[in-house]
Length: 244
Image (cartoon, rainbow, N blue to C red; front, side):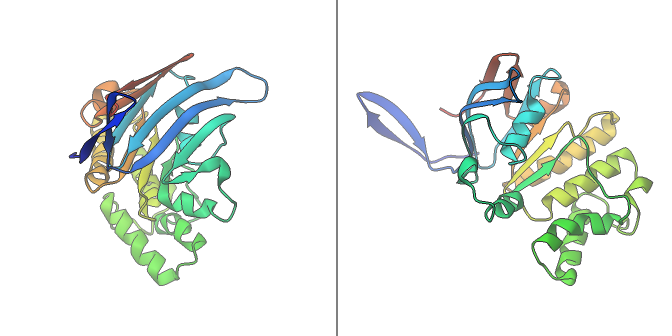
């Protein structure tokens, strides 16, 4: 990814600034539950537009928590988080739906609705925004086509395979055309071929500019796609390949 940079003088030192937009920024972020230990402690990083990032770490290291903070699903205990130009702790209730349109979230539990068809599951985020049923249906069909589920619009999610359910969750996450896409272990418990097909879906969205963060244990698979790693360990945080 090309960048336009310029040199500036800062207190006698040379610094680099980039014209690429900062999509996500954590500044001294802590997260704990109740009076328990910090799941995340003093986390600092930036993500610029169009990056493909791998979030790694053992179970319990805080990967899922990190993604939920980015998606605005949980608040930080301390520190500042900015996503798509919005500081989350200052975000009004009125503005939160706009954040959710900008960030597509795929959790380990896909939360698919089994009393609705695949098409209706994907249409749901559009219905919340007040789009007409015709517009919502057309966009949902296009999203299903992008993830390889064309022709399965009328099927119940329970009739789909595990890999197809994951792709259905991806279609629902991208139907609002988000600028940022985050996924928590999207290839867990899938065979290698299915995992690669799902990763290819993420790669295709990233290639058209969608900033992508994926938490996964599968380092060998992710090494084929991600160009930067955020690694979490108890009490430690490592950022590999960050821009200067």
